[in-house]
Image (cartoon, rainbow, N blue to C red; front, side):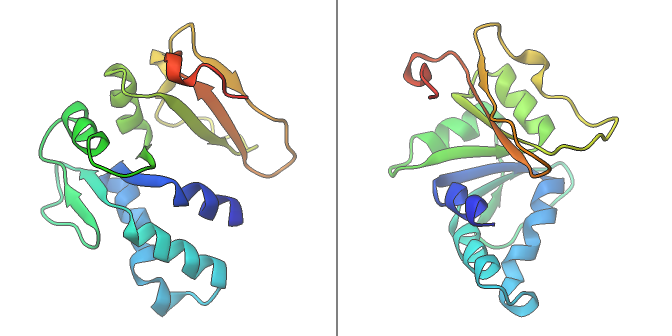
Length: 158
């Protein structure tokens, strides 16, 4: 959980679809349902992040979230142009695929769990040949995979 907390501290804004938004609603009421110090710390950080939710079915959202009113490129530009440090993070395979198609990604930070699912929503079919992947080998824990998009500002992932 500590790793997730540190990663989340650097998020300036978060774009997600309806499904992921609804899954993350648990953090809106963490003080009533959780007691762990790390969980409560994550909840405080998560709630402070502005979120843009892409949905065809939701009419309203709660907390520090708003419904998207434009396409992903326009919403992304709006967030990127706001003052402050941090990254604009995108959650969900469908939304990530749309962002890749619009060439909005500077760096991929994927988490790979060592399990076999046999299905899911692909988003990486638009990756370019100059993308570079670094992935440390791990055991049974999730492993973070970083992949640069080939943009000059992110040429060295280290």
